[in-house]
Each structure stands twice: as structure tokens, then as C-alpha cells.
Image (cartoon, rainbow, N blue to C red):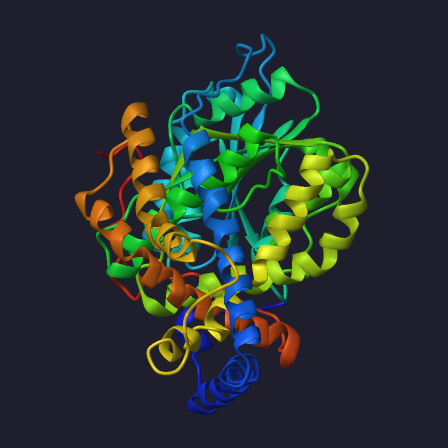
Length: 460
């Protein structure tokens, strides 16, 4: 799989015109018949409302369930396992030193911890120098260079796993910083139940003031990590690990093989494989790492389009299998169908958006549902309600939010609609134009020579 930076990926005017024209054709095919048939219009609007209610209803339920407290039921084992922290790094100069420092500072015996920093030889900044310096100065750090064709996170992580000797593997992105208690909590979960093969913690955004995009992405991620991912755990649904951190038993890779290098979201693919194998993913929102959300349009677009297209790939691959897999409970199977089917909802949202314009001109805006006005209001208010439930839960747990995050909750629908446009582009890439897969890396704050001066290990 080819790898490009967000800036190098770019988009030509011709591409914009082709994608815009194709989208317009799809919009016309869906919405123009509403001018000739009231029944069609009401049916289409009803389908959209029902799907949105399913989405926001599930999110609201998850926001309430997020108030549940969860803790590993056992203490640390007497014979502590060796934990290998695997960090793939490509052009990560602005963040890599802080990530390594946080990994070395966790509340876990240093002689039972190793940090494998796998840096790409193709990096064009000081990533290699930072990795090698820490490898020279810390016995616990292995600096490993990967100089192979092709790339992507899955390929880099698989390469790094060859050098990891721990019984447990912590895989984190190079822009994540461990909470001091994260490793210990994960170890306790694995000790509690041998059927747990993966512990998914919470990725907590730490840069909401970098830009409007970073602000809204931070709020969106809080909802996703708590109301969605943790909510699944509480109601016994189809748990997944996504985002930039997770812990695994090393035996997982012996039995299931490495991460799939042919998909863009290897984490979601591996989640499905773990469940299909009859093992568990434990989601724990108190196993924390602090992440940086993209602050630029190019970085945000490249990340979200990679996620969107990857979800569609995994949905096509696993949805038929999981819906029939008897190793899952009925609730898990139903939740898996829900999860992967909703990967296409943002596409429908954009394609029928003209309905809301036509309401003012020619349509009556009604559905086949009684009280639809109240239902639309509930949909409109859901981001604010869910955001504030998450904020309240975090406040109870001692986690703070920037005041701007409380304001961003009121404009989150605009952000989510803009993100839906990304899903349309990903849909066209995957199913219409069948474009070549390219792993576009996420730019970091301080790229292009703006990184802070390098700190020596141990400096405050």
C-alpha cells in the first residue's frame, strides 16, 4: 500500500469536478422523483428519519450508560507479565518524544516494560534521530528502523511486533501519551479473564484549541469513545477497538495472524476477527491515553476519509459472516449488523440533503410517522444532549473539558454533516471509481518545521 503525507496527497480540480458531478447525479436520482410523487417523498423522508433516530437513540442510550463505573475485578498478578509498547512512527517529530516519555513514566515496574519504536526509514524529519536517541539512553527502548517498500500503520505495526518480546502488547499511535495508570489497569483486565484478548481504553483529545476542526473533532471523539465504544461494553453489544491505542495478548497474533495490511482500518478488521474466534474485547474508559486530533483541513480530511473507506471495506468483508456467526450472542450479532450497516448512513444523509431545501419550495416536509415534528426536534437536539451527558460523566470522574467544547456541542451537527461529505467521497472511491488504496498519514501540530525544541529525557 502506498503512503503519502496529507499535503502530498492533494486534490486536483478535475477530481473535484468529477466527484461533484457524480454526486449530483446520485442526488438527482434520489430526490427529483419527490417532485412527482408525494408517497415517494414521504417514504424517503421517513426512511431518513428512522435511520437518524436509530443513530441518535443508540448514542443517547450510550451516553446514559457511560455513567457506569467499570474496574478490573482483580489486583495485579504476583508474576507480572512483560508488556511491550509498540509505537510505529512516520514523520512524528513534533510528538514522538512526549509519547516515549509518557510510556516510560507509567506506573508499572520498569523491568517489566519495553518500548519498541518502529520508525520508517522514509521519514523526512527528525523521527529517526529521536527514536535512536531514546534507544541509546534507555535500556527499555528498542529503536527499530523499517526500510521496506509499501507502508501504512498495519504494515509498520506488524514489522514492530517481530521485535516485541512481551506477553502483552500495547499498540499506540505516536501522538498518544499514556495516563500513568493505563498499563496497570490493562494488565489487571487480562489477569481477570483469559477470554479477554484485547483491552480497549479511551483516547482523550488534548488539543481542542488548535482549530475549529480540532475543537469539534475533540467533542466528537469524546462521544464516540464513551457513548459508543464504552456503551457497547455496558449493554453487552458488539465491542470494537478503534482509535490509536489498544492492548493485546501476544498469543492473539500467533492464532489470528498479523494485522491485515490490505485494509485501511486494520483495528476494526481485527475486532471482527477476535469476535469471530470466540474471544472478548474489554472496553475500559479509565485506561487512558491522551491524543492529538488533526488541526488542519488536509490532516483531518485524510484521516476521516481513511476511516470512512476502511469502515466500508470491513463492512463488506465481515457483515455477512458476523450476522451468521453462532459464537456471538444474538445481541452481539444484531449489534454487529447495526454497526456495519450504519457505515453508509452519512452517505444517504448527504444525498437526500436537498429535501430540506425543497421543503421551502415545493414539498410538505411530512413523513408517515405520527409526531414527526417532535422526532425531528429530538434528532436536532441530540448532539447537545449527548455531549453534555458525556461532559457530566467526565466531571464526575475528575476529567475536565475546555469551555469551548461546551459551545461546540451546539454546532456539532454542522461538523457531522461536513464529515458526511467525506463519507460520500470515500463511497465513490470504494464502490464507483475503485481507486487505488493509499494510506495518507495524519499531519501533526508543529509539522513543517514548527516543532518545539527537542527535550532531553527527564526534562520538565
